Structures are given as structure tokens and as C-alpha cells.
Amino acid sequence: MRWPGWLVLVVMGLGGCGVSFPRPMTAADIANLDSGDALIAYLAQRDASPAVCDLRSTGPHVTRFDRDMATVLVRGLDDGKVDLSLGHACIDAALESGSQEIAAQLIDAVARGTHSLATDRALETSPALQARLAILQAVYLERPSGKDGDPKTMDGIFDALRRKFWGGRFGPVAARSLNELLGVVDLERGRYGGRPVDLATIDGLAARGDETLLRRFADRLPAADLRALAQRRLIRLRIAASPFPEVRAQAAAVEARVMQQGVNRVSLIDQPVVRASLDGKKLPARNVLVRQDLSRQSATLFGYLTGGGLSVLPNLSLGGALWVQVTGLSRPITVCGAPRSYDPTPCIGGDDVTIENPLAGSDHDGTFRFRDKASEAEVVGLTRAGDSFPLAIDVGGHPLVSFSWPLRFERPKNLVFSAKDGRGPTLQVVVTHPDPILYLFGVSSDGLFYRAVVEKNDLTTFHLVSRGATGTAGMDGSSGSDGSAGVDGSSASCPSSSGGDGSRGGDGTAGGNGGPGGNGGDGGDVLVQLQCGRVACSADDVALLRRAVLSQGGPGGRGGAAGPGGKGGRGGSGGSGTSCFDPSTNTSGSVGGGSNGMSGSDGSSGSPGPDGFPGRPGVVRVEVVASSHP
Image 1 (cartoon, rainbow, N blue to C red):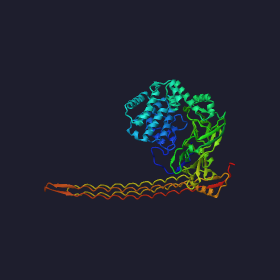
Image 2: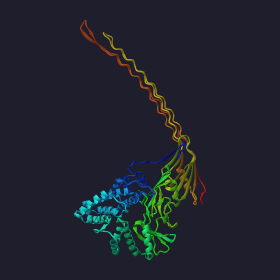
Image 3: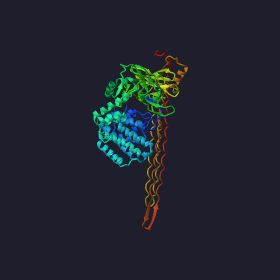
Image 4: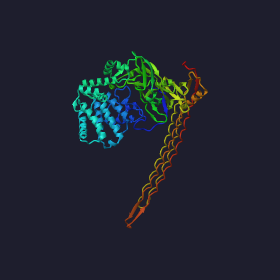
């Protein structure tokens, strides 16, 4: 945006001290900082989203997971800075979305962290260390197929753990964990219980109904055909145990669908939605705060708990919270889980669900993430719901569930339009008051347009100002001339001529007077049109706007500084004395020197120039007009 030559936009408010990382730190901040330490600082916040670790995310996210990033992330789990479940989700997102090289960096870091915790003597008595070890082990055991660490690194770590394990050097807690881990390492090499895995092994697990091991086989076996066999056996067990008679009655079709898609997704075209409900206890309850930057016409959104500090906006994961009754099914269903879950339970696709909020986005997995950066136009759009952050849920294109969070607008910093020269800008201001607590400002001047949202309680301290230019500074007075130096006296001479006195130095001249400062420019005229919608505007509304919208004359220019007087000249030096010798009498004597002359007087300083007069305020008119909306 180009600014007209006469206009300078000034945002008035308190500054802050610099810190290492912003507080709160948004996902957009993470994308800009793009470092391991910044990622840990972000994840340490309440409601932080693991989506910042998803390299395919459409929202802000880190751009790399090199060795340093991976090491810092695992260390954040190990030292307790990051919530374990959040850290797990973050690593999972990076593994799912990253390249094999990225996966290798992460898995290597996880293996090193596992070795460090397993060999820590405090593990046996520390629930915290045990929980961290369980998370790191889960990351390794549940990672996507084909995402592996560097073979040299991993073989070295596992061989060292295996020697210590068979040497009996671990306590019972570490031994149980490593027994499972090393068993999976063998499974990834196609062996279980010391024997190669074959169809009979898989059928034996199915006969025992061992879903846990079948899932492990389905994920970790190196041969694709054996993984598929384990997946089918697992799906069949779950179909047989399904509480849906429709699933059991169509077992073959359901099995084929889950093998192809990973889930049993229902078509809402074939089976339309009847009704929906929301289990609010499964979703976070937050307040939303909007912090506006009026100069940039942008805003940042934060979440907070009543009585608590600001943090980021939480994700909304609708799986298990949104329940939908569809035609042809005996029970309500929810949003589908991850495709790798091999779950035959009927479900709706994440892309069948939308949230009626311009800042809500989803990667079609049933989890909605909110942009924490918005344009001022989007912020104004949020006010259509008054003091609520709208979260109405549509399923299959039909609005079914009403839901919202409380919404607040932080008082924006004052918006001051100040001219560079002369009179302040003329402003056209339209203020709409559609809600009892909200005032929406639209400010036009010379082709520029600004929006702002101000709550009623803040109108007494928020100001919108047209300000005249500051007067020019007066010229500083000239410096007086220094006085000339006095003449030095003549030196003494033998036999009897004394040294001459130095003459007085010349006086310095007076300094010049400072020039007067220029007068400040007058404030611009401001026309305010107040629209109150269906409710009539009150005298209180008009009075509040008269205090909030101002025209101010620019301050007068500073008077010029007084010129300093010239320095008095140095007095002349007295002539020097001398020693004399009379050879006729063989005697010595001396002849005195002259006196130093006095220095001249310093010149007086000039007078400082007077400051310019401040400009006069322009005219501010407030008119109540009929709303343009019915």
C-alpha cells in the first residue's frame, strides 16, 4: 500500500522489552523462527497444536526436521518441557508427512533417547521417567511402515540394549519395556518367538483373538503380503465384535472397504443425516481474545481460560465428540479415525464436516485448527455473532449443531492520522453499533480505509485522531565571534631594560538570537456517522464517540536555541626577564619580565526563539443516521 505524501499514520501505545520468543507464541511465529528451541517453547504452551510439526499442513508449520531439530524435540520430551501426548503427536505428524531422511533423523533421536532412559538407574523408581520411556517406545512401535532410522545407528543401539538385556543388567521395569521393544525389532526382521512368521503364526493369533499382536504384525512385518494377512484377520475379529448388526451382516463388504480405505466410511448421499449431537465435555471450553494491529490492519487471536493467562487457540477434534444418526444404522456414528486403525466401525469422513467460521481450517481428518493471524476485515466479520466466536457445525452440508466460545476484543492502541505538513487529514468515519457492547469503526481518508472494533467499556480510553502537522523548528542563533588575542610584551634586555607588559585580549561578540518556531498545523475536520441498527442510538452513544473521536492541532515548533557568545581573547604574555653579567665588576644580576595582559570578556548569549503556537482543532461532527441494513 502506498501512502500519500501528506499522511503519517501513528499508533500510540506502550512499548515492550524484547524477549527471546514471543509470549504467547503463535503457529505463525513458529513458521518464522523455524528452530528447535522455538518449537519447544511453542509446544510448552497450553493448547499448542501438533499441526505445526506436519510438513504437509496448509497452516503455519516448521519447514525442516534435521538432526538438531529432532534432538531438541526428543530432549523436550525427556526433560518434561513438552507434554508427553502432545510431543508424541508432534513426532507422529512429522513422521507421517516427512521424507525418509526426516524420519531417519527423528527415529535415530528417539532410539538414542530410549537408550538413555532405559539405562538410567532412576527409571525403576521414577514414574515420570517410566512415562517418558513409554512415549518414546510408542513412537517407535507405532510409526508408519517404511519410516525407519539409519541402520548403522539403530543396529548399534539395539545390539547394545540386547547384550545388556540378556546379561540381566536391567531392573524389572526396564526389562519389561525392552522385552517388548526387542520383540518388535525381531518382528521387523520377519521373526517372532525365534521363528520366521508365516500364515500359521498369524492364524494362531487370530484364533486366540489377540488383537494387540495382530495390530503389531499388521504394522511391523517387513513382507507386504503377511502384513495384509494380519490386517484381514484383525478386521475380521473386530467385525465379529462390532455392536452394529449392519456391520456383522455385511462382513465381506465391510472388510473390503476397510482394507482399501483403512476405515468404514459411510456415504451421506446414500445414507443421509437424520440428526446430530455434540458432547461438549469432549471439547475444550475457551474464551477468545482478539488483539488488533490497526496500522497493519491485522489481528492476532489468542485463547484463554477465565482468570488465566493468554495462550494459543486450541484445536477442535470432533472424533468422539460429534455424534451423527444416519439413515440405515442402528446407532449414532462419529468422525473416522486414522486410516491405519483398521476399524470397521461405521463413521463419517472428516471432509463431511465443516465449521462456520472463516478462521477454521481442516486437513479433512475431523480436527479443526484456527488461524491465529487474521485481517481486520475478517475480524469485523466475526462481530456478526456479537460477543461469540462462532463454531456452528455443518454435516453433509446441513447446519446441525450450534456451538460457540465467548469472544472479546482487546482495546486497540490509539489510531492517529498526522499530517506531515499543514492541516490534518479530513476523516470520514462510519461507526456501527449492532451489538450492545461493540462499536465498529470504518475510517476513510484520501483513498485509504481502516477498520477497528472497540468494546463499549474501552471507548473512554480509545482515541481516533486527525492531527495537524508539528510546526517547524526555529533556526538556532549564530555563535558570537571570539575576541582577538592580546599582543605579547617584549623580552627584557641587559643591562637594565625590563620586559614589556602583554596587552589585554579583545572581547568576544554577543551570540545571535534563536529564530521563532513555526506554528502547528490545524487539525482536520472529522465527520462521524453513527448507525445503531435496529436499536435506536442513545445520547450515551453520541457522548462516548465525542470523547473518542478527536481533532487536534499539531504542536508548535520548538524555538531556535540561543547562539552562544564569543569567547574573550587571550591576554598577551608579559615579556620574559633575563640575567646580566658585568665583566668589569665580575658581578651578575637580573632584569625583571613584564606582566601578562588580561583576557577579554566573553560575549553574552543571544535569546532563545519563542516556540510556535499549537494549531487549532478542526471540527468534529457526530451524526446519527439510519442504518443501511434492514
